[in-house]
Amino acid sequence: MKIAFIGQKGIPALSGGVEKHVEKLSTRLAAQGHEVTVYVRSHYTPFPLLEFAGVRLVHVPSINTKHLDAITHTLLSTLHALFTSYDVIHFQSIGPSIFALIPRLLKPKTRVIATFHSRDYLHQKWNIFARIFLHAAEWMTCTIPEKTIVISETLQQYAEKQYEKVFPFVPNGAEVEYEADTEHLATWSLRPKRYVLSVSRLIRHKGLHYLIKAFNELEDTNKLPNNFKLVIVGGAVHTEEYVTFLHLLARGRKNIIFTGEQSGKVLQELFSHAAIFVQSSEDEGLSLALLEAMGHGVMPIVSDIPANREAVANTGAYFPSKDIDGLKRELAYFANRGDEVTALGKAAEERVREHYGWDAIATKTLEVYENVLQRGHVNEHYVPSRSK
Image (cartoon, rainbow, N blue to C red):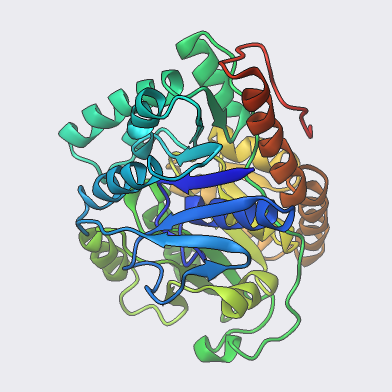
């Protein structure tokens, strides 16, 4: 089968849940013998790289600004795809999926799939005009492609109620792994199991300001172990003002560390040796960073939004979204309960192993492709086998 992925920045993933999703999925499909192409942006994936783990990379230009990067790259990628004999074109996220109409009209023998990752218009980085566009894009994502995959049961419930049709559920995933080395921890004077970790893009709806404020207040009242640190991994996404605000909140705090974007072995070490993972988001689809932390055996403390509850179940702790006092209570308790943290981390790891393996996710995605290819039209009553 010839498969093209459109809408992501590129692979290998440096940051971003969509990029990690596409990397893990595309490489597994390629390993099964399928011809897989991922359209990439040269400011994200270096231009000389034309192949990654058996996946063909096609570089297409874009206008690299906050509002034009994704839309220009997706449009040009879609036009390029019209002149290639793909069996399946798979669009990622609601913004890029507006261009699903082009191959539906101009390349009717190619099957068109989309993945609904998140209700992006809820994210505060967008202005009113962008949010109106994203509302319209969601409608097109859920109505134009021959199948639209949702990555969480929370999104599935929303989409099926909103659009009165069946949406296949194929979750995000993670790998159960552990990096024993600690050589990179010394860069930030970190010791194993002596820091709280948060990994995300530095954008307001991720709620990192709540986490920093909670950590500061706990430090000021001596409710954390001595020299216990907060490590924030991630970079700005056209959100420099918010990043400046976060650094102001942490000014003068030697135990709050911003590492910037990290990947590969460095990120694996940071996950593997964290005591606790905190996700303080106001909104999520199904967070890959959260699943990765759980897959490394790290106990999660998360805001009580539906997507976080879906991922964590009974393997972590919750606090009311946006509630700094609630987050303080959970952090203060678990930072001083090593045995409970270890037990919950093991439970989180087992949950990832059972429900969120990438091999199973690739198989379920392929089921969606094959079903649409066999039938040649929308099958509103088909749902791939579920893992939970």
